[in-house]
Amino acid sequence: MVSVFAGLAGGLVATIVMTIVMMVMGDGGPPPTAALVAKFSDGNAEDYAMPGMALHFVYGIVAGAVFVVGVPLLGLSLGSIAVAVGLGIVYGIVLMIGGMMFWMRTIIGMEPDRDMMVMFGMVHVVYGVVLGAFLGTGILA
Image 1 (cartoon, rainbow, N blue to C red):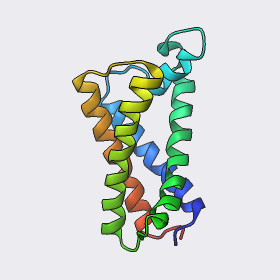
Image 2 (cartoon, rainbow, N blue to C red):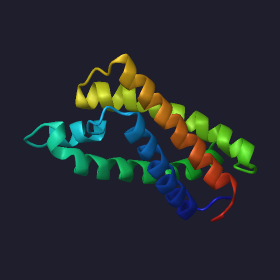
Image 3 (cartoon, one colour):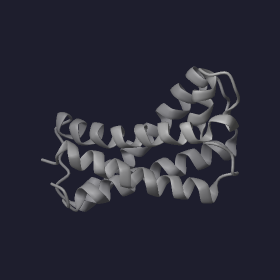
């Protein structure tokens, strides 16, 4: 069984890689989490880019721990890199759907355009691949 600590570490590594990809592919604007921070503050998303990025990292780290706790609850195992990466991809897609449908549309009230949805989906799949690969290696098991 993979430890929660490994999930936290994997979430951190996956979020770093995801963020790099997001910054390379993105439009230079703040992450959607900045819009969430701005919604509960008195400003616009550009004013909250750094707090938004910090919140994004918290989400990514916690999501790694949720993954390692949730996989065994579903009766699954991260026994090999291939299985772990496959489960990571599925998890990344679940996070993408949850992020687009719940956080972006319902909580923040934004309607992402096609380009944003493609990038959002791609970086969440990258997150899942990196998380699964990290945990599948058993580095911190």
